[in-house]
Amino acid sequence: MIKAIIHTTLYDFETWIQDAYIIFDEEILEIGPMSAFIDRGYKIIDGIDQWVLPGLVCGHTHLYSAFARGLMMPYHPKNFQEILDQLWWKLDRELDQDMVYYSGLVLGLDFLKNGVTTVIDHHASGQDIRGSLKTLSKAVSKDVGLRGIYAFETSDRFDVSTCINENMNFMKSHQTDFMRGLFGLHASSSLSDRTLKKVKHKLGDYPIHIHVAESVMDEEDSQVNYQKPIIHRLVDHGLLHPKSIIAHAIHISDAELDLIKEHQSVIAVNITSNMNNGVGLPPIHRFMLKGVPVILGNDGISSAMTTEYLQAYYAMHHQDQSPNPFQLTDLKRMIQETSSYASSILETKLGRLQKGYQADLLMVPYIPPTPVNQDNAFGHLFFGMFHSFKPKHVWIKGQQKIKDYQAKKSIEDKYRQAQQSSARLWDILSKDV
Image (tube, rainbow, N blue to C red):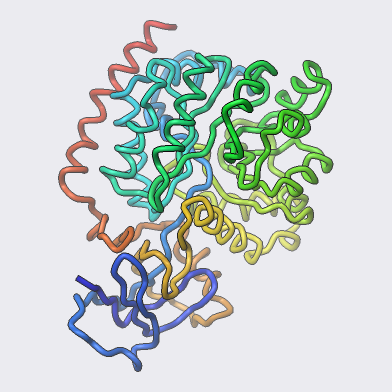
């Protein structure tokens, strides 16, 4: 049944309309001021004292990180490589299909409750590579109901041929506006030239999704072992295609930025994770000045994106030692570019409240204590809503996924079962100490 939210405030990071309506099915059919609304038998939803926003997009995450929450094990890293060795590589090598499913379901539902309706994931599971993306996408896209773009982290840590086949099989068999694949690569330091040649042989012109220069150690490794920067190495192997995601890119050079721009790729920044790992902050100003699209991810450190918006804004002020160079307009541009990137991969329209766009919608209670207009609406969103952002209702492709802050009971019940899977993982890890 076609639905209409009435007497609401519409805002899509571009256009703000007060006392408005929005009519939608799978797509948005009509918007406008209430003075123009005509009820043609729609299912009416009262939007008084609420804002309707487009669903948020996470541009880079690791859904398998869900089972690291609260994990206690020996952990005394002195650098980024030791963070991988002592935590993440221990964890991901033990993941099997059951753990992949439940970790995906947990973070998928947590994302959904935080207003994220599309995720771009970078997956790894050492025990079960084959079929892992299908399992993950079942949990996240089929059962929870988020749109998803998935990739497996090809790495010399795993069987390379199996990693390559997992990426290629998923990409070829999932090509809808709800699920797609990218070709996943872990990081230059875990990829030999032999492996990159194997990837190129199978890849064609598919975009890649790769960690680059998250730590300066990654760039140093490339220089020592291959006598060239990471991006030059990817280009020399013919791997940097349009729409590729370069995650992090904290320590890349201007020459590498030029190549990213030339090859029409994007950079996914992950501010909170970078600060947590002590690897530095991405030079977002340089990225923007070079004309490289910058999208926002969270690297799996949380199940929200609004916290990343806050961190990006405040961290850039800290980095600049000034509140002036990085403005709210820059942040808004990054949010919009994240939606635009996901739209281009999924071949659909996300991120706007306009006719013909997908009905991925959020309803968030908000009574503004000060006047609102077109010019200051994003300021209200940032300072008034992002700090405690919890949508009351969420629709994806017109289907209600969250109602009164809750998902359907069957998904909430499966969420409760996840602890059995995580406990089994923790037991395995405790024996590996």
